[in-house]
Image (cartoon, rainbow, N blue to C red; front, side):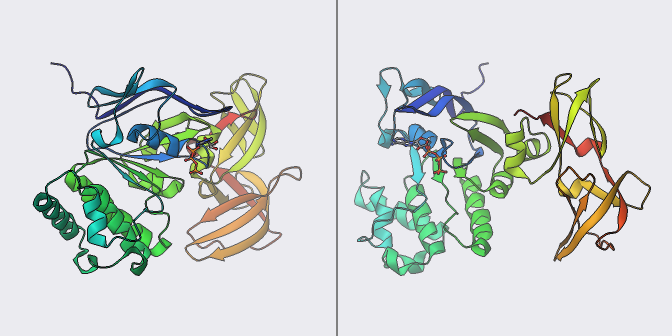
Length: 350
Ligand SMILES: Nc1ncnc2c1ncn2[C@@H]1O[C@H](COP(=O)(O)OP(=O)(O)OP(=O)(O)O)[C@@H](O)[C@H]1O
């Protein structure tokens, strides 16, 4: 038996704007019901990719398929309204002159009035925004606007929902709660979601899968844990964490640093490598154990403590973070070690 087509498939999608390749050979498969976070720094092509999937923009080459049918490709362009794709914009794009109800009804214009109202009532109920229906967008808080925008996007029951930074306009406190609730509802509805974010924590925690983009191409794709624990490039590593970096040349498959020798898979013999160690993966030890270091300063930051140490005069200080209380003082000589299993090594030229 043939396995079902992915809900969404992109085949070598390319989109150029003058000299900029906003998308370069982007290929991707998304299974039905999956929640995918599209992450990457500003300008890497995230919004362009969403627009191509929605049919708001046309690729110069390659194809987009929904349920195995080409919707964008050579000589084919299915209009956005015929793709069963919902779109939620970063600024919510609510119509200021329409009430909440009329904003929600806007996406249901093709239905008969009675059916449109039934659908609108249903989604308003699910999102618990009954009390807002007669208000206008300027009378809503950020969180309320987000819900109304979500209601408007979901009312036509799209199979696939595209969301461009849907939580970035909310305060930090509200953001986590709204995100959990929104994604919980989308999972319940079985909606396939592609959500853009530039927030690394959100990318790691929100989706089933993270697609990290860089300069128009997919740098790495996988679960949050895969990208965090096994980034395949310095770019991917640095997108999700802060690192201490120690230079060293690769000799006999190892890079030597003041912190010790580390296996240097991916760095050619004789080439310079950079050893990446997260602040939480450095351990302070009694003097005489591990590498010798001198404490530079020490700060309590609430949940964690941060200590900066020097291991060699020619290297910038290393940052150590720990949730245990560290009893050290500036100028103290101390031992320092890194867990080789948690250390990453990349070519210095990258
Ligand atoms: N209509 C356009 N005309 C010209 N260049 C464009 C156009 N749209 C996008 N670009 C360029 O394409 C590249 C990708 O843009 P895009 O908006 O997709 O990035 P992004 O990752 O969504 O960025 P951000 O996180 O800042 O929203 C950028 O270099 C941008 O300047």
